[in-house]
Amino acid sequence: MIIDFHAHIFPEKIAEKASKGIEKFYDMPMRSDGRVQSLLEQGEKAAVDRYVVHSVATIPEQVESINQFIIDTVQQYPEKLIGFASMHPLYKNIEKQLDTSIEAGLKGVKIHPDFQKFLMDDEAAFPMYECIEGRLPLLVHTGDYRYEYSKPERLARVLDRFPRLTVIGAHFGGWSVWGEAANILHGRGVYVDTSSSLYALSPEEARHIIDQYGADHVLFGTDFPMWTALEELEMLAKIPMSFEEREGILYKNAVRLLQL
Image (cartoon, helix red, strand yellow):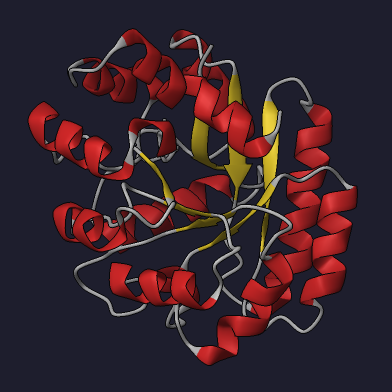
């Protein structure tokens, strides 16, 4: 079994534009267009069974419409998709929206401090963490050498302040600052996903980072539409690990974390 823990999806009418926006932000070519059907088609080629899907509310006013899109899409493909809600620290009805998301079957929350332009450890974000803590896992885009918003040390301060917050640090806990992130975040119980990381790391470097976090806290992810599952699985296969570790990363850790 394979679970892709990190896939962005967008409504049909804006999918291509949204994907191009990500491409421009990171100056990296997209492999796909962000449509749900494209995700399922490319995943089928790699025998992916399920996908954790989400999107980002860049402004508070987008939270409700994005979450409704995720809810509707998951209900359309209940055997394939696992939905994460979007949240924004300046959104006014966080607790109510979280209740709605949980009642609709969403399994986590996704935030992206760089897109949303807030410092991860800003006190203005604390009410959001307080609402999420102990209720749902929080998938956080972490790390970008160009910005202050999502630095790994900011996530460390959030974890210190909210010890019951279950966090998945995307991109091995620190995109573009992988080694620094692992040195800061290891031993804190944080989960990480492999998305948008393996292209930049040697198998030996990736193995070292996995050891720092613990293989039981690592989740396979593609960062669709950035990469394809086939590409990511080929790179993952080059990392030396046991059969049990590989099974954990591909699906068992996700099943345990999300209580599937």
